[in-house]
Length: 143
Image (cartoon, rainbow, N blue to C red):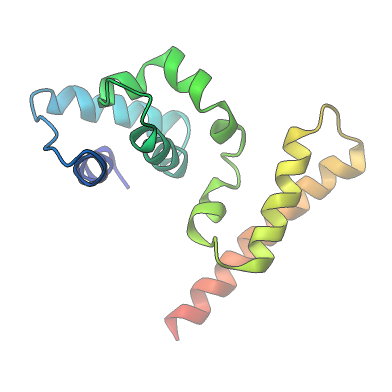
């Protein structure tokens, strides 16, 4: 997903949540800011952040510029940024119980203050298992 697709997603989600049309006045600036976020994190982190940002009724300035501001993004979406390794699986395979269980276990490791060597290894194993499950799920949906 590139920045143009991400902006389309933003515009559609914005209209869905607010019932208003998103202004096109800063189209290029929006694309550049989204591209920076996608490059720095990944598209799934940005998608999850967009969803939370637009659905939050406390935010008054619902603009891409505000979302992408460095201090705001890093502070507000710290938990999503920490989960960037598994956010893809969390977003795509929410209904799969095995994936859900692995993500919960991974999140427990993220939330831990310190990890033993075996827990660090388990964290890597979880990521490998999630990748394998993704391949299996994708292959089963193709047939």
